[in-house]
Image 1: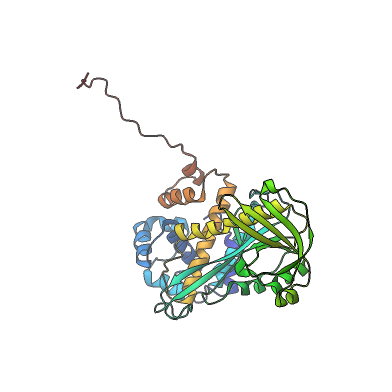
Image 2: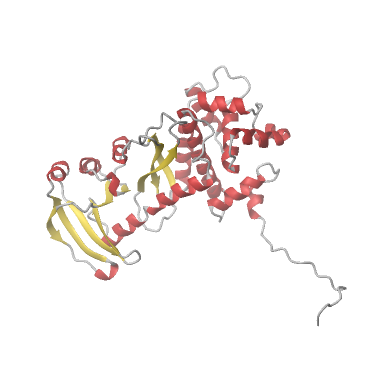
Length: 377
């Protein structure tokens, strides 16, 4: 928790008056308790209360000044503005991106490469009536724009499950010169043309009903898996109207999955094999969603209100980014999963944090007894 910038955290709290008329259980206490729940994967508020009260004499030195109570924590999650923790998570993300700016993601490119996708978290509609999705089913969506250098999420939008993915492109500020890798669910030519006009680049997959007119075909090396590299213009009525500029169409055969993939991009400089490899890197955001669902507490929630759900998600993201920052600062050659597992059993140990990860693991050998008689020859 020494990596938490407390001054910036207090600024976020004061901006939304999080500690207004609060005497005993501050927003920092709430953040530390919820971070403890994420790091140790607690199942309920009563579970958090029992574990923290079991280490009551160590809480003050950890920074938890208020008395931990299930009702107090539930009230804090329901009442205190979730935007406090959303803005604080963005501060941590900004700090983490500076640390991972030179990190490699498998392709040697100078410009920033983003992957955009969303994941759905199912909810019970009777307990979460505000999370509208289906007629008898509730859900929320995490729309995430992730920087592939270090797998750091840069933009996260939490919406109801009924919001279509393509609408999120209207809320993202396009960075000129950056590459955006998006799935077919975000294929909307008017929004793609807006990315093109701003100066950004996109890589996406074409749908099966996409119609076009070929203008020029580039020479290719079929040994790389690329089957064609064409300059085209759309001929569908709405596609031609929404995207009047030229496009680049690349057809690629993936030998691993035995599939033909058709990519659309407005980048005419990169080699066609690099475009195919870039789309393959989009899988990192799928791994990110899988990781946070398995190792952080975002599928089961401690409260049922919208504010409580968003508070828990943003604190979970803050914990993920804090672990990534700690890994880079301490130069740990361990996976985030291993770091979380070690932290979950050493949270209350009084030792330098680097010592918990630097101890070598020796296999336990059976003691030798030289005076033991031999039973069998």
